[in-house]
Length: 224
Ligand SMILES: NC(=O)c1ccc[n+]([C@@H]2O[C@H](COP(=O)([O-])OP(=O)(O)OC[C@H]3O[C@@H](n4cnc5c(N)ncnc54)[C@H](OP(=O)(O)O)[C@@H]3O)[C@@H](O)[C@H]2O)c1
Image (cartoon, rainbow, N blue to C red; front, side, top):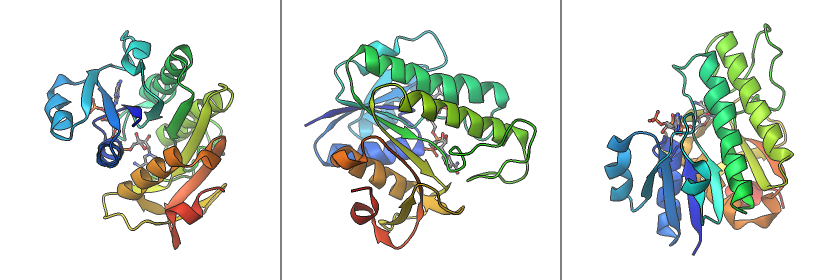
């Protein structure tokens, strides 16, 4: 049995992943900032732990004893440019620092399609969930790119998963995974299943890839 700490523990992907991990017998800790969410986590046998990734909370203490951490938090679509920096970048970096200081080597990053080549500031962005040319989305992709780079150079055993546009459709277990893919969508349930498979497959350590729905079963689609 492993212990997995998920940052953004009440998020949609986080809850789906948490349920998969609990089902396979792991201990799951969900890092949340809102105490009203504790009951939802407990109901799913996920241990809630209050930790605001943009505040002064002790992130190292929150992940202490975990075997792996997952960054599934995000400022969300309604947030402005400032929170792309404090949450999508700053929160991910705090989790990197916490993992390093606690000797936790495994780190899974929920990144975003488009973060592999973010638009320069002031140019039209292209990516997973951009509804329109929008510099906030560009700032989001640049924040995700910087977070991914910080993880890549951290010395941790990382896997960076860059999903396309997220949907709440049922998971199919069929995906496309590659260094770069054309834009597309993917159910959050399949993202969670890919994250679980990454924790189980050492060959995904050191890998970064785009993820959309596709025709290939997850186990076969992952890097060998
Ligand atoms: N939308 C897309 O199409 C898309 C595509 C590719 C990648 N992504 C990435 O995938 C991530 C996960 O997706 P999702 O749908 O599962 O997201 P989600 O449901 O919005 O979950 C994000 C979680 O982050 C938490 N959070 C925000 N600020 C925090 C803070 N300061 N400290 C701790 N937790 C904080 C939120 O908690 P609160 O309830 O407290 O706000 C929320 O539970 C997104 O955040 C995004 O970066 C999204």
